[in-house]
Amino acid sequence: MFTDFLQFTAGGLTSGAIYGLLALGWVLVMRVSGLLFFLQGEFVVVGVFVIVTLQDHGASIAVAAVGAIAACVVGALAVDGLVIRRLRSATPMSEVLVLLGLALLAGHALQQIAGPNARGVKPFLPTKPVSIFGAFVTPHQIAAVVVTAVATAAVWFGVTRTSLGRAMQACADNPEGAVLVGIRPVRLRTLGFVGAALIGGVAAVVLGPLAAMTPLGGLLWSLKGFIAAVLARWSFMGAVAAGIFLGLIESYGAGYISSVYKDVISLSMLVVVLLLQGAVSRDSIVQRLRTRRMSLR
Figure 1 (cartoon, rainbow, N blue to C red):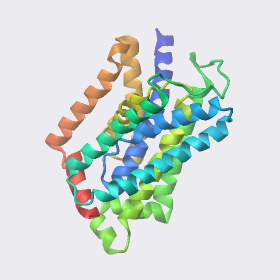
Figure 2: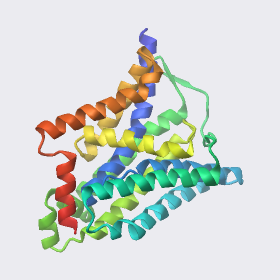
Figure 3: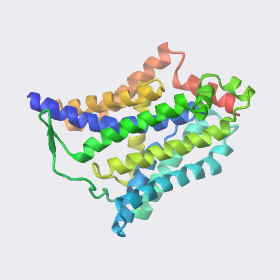
């Protein structure tokens, strides 16, 4: 019984690390632009398919990873330049619908290009499991946790120890005051999109060998990151902790109840948190969207 618990914990930590990475992207975009970035999961899926395609043509994992990250960054810049900049006078609900529509469009476009079948990245680390405190994990699972830790540390350093990060913090804490002192929120928004794309590309590299991806699976991954970001109340450091918490809850639910309820558990948590925020919190998502978008126009 205890061995099962350890195994479920190991699986939950791996899933939670990925959710934490995705949540970092969500928080980054929300704090600098006030947008609900439903494309975060699409970066992961596109990144995986780019890696798979390049590997099929003989590219090494290093070249494929760089190609995937570059594709994600180009996609983020295209979305910003062609779509987001044209939504300056749109209502928050219109922006949500546009970004949600873009996420669905990206998934279906990828399905037309690559086909409907699930694809996974070829393992680039040893596949033999190792025992850690009685739980068997693969090197790829360990890599997912390590990469998340490194990414979290990098984001923390960038936000708290650099002038660009302090400008982002100023936009998040007092958008109107930031504009008055010469900070350009539009430029920071573009950088936020690029940062989210980088995170999505990195997540594709570490997640690709662990889970096969379908072209239409990006939205579900986006929602998992969104749930973690909401649980963390849009905090950078809290996002990873919330992602790990979500991964553990899903893993324990799948292990002790049924794997059928894995996604149901996390989506139910989202509904409960949103209801509680709307009822008792002044920091609800709707309020954030209204405040941030009014200041960025």
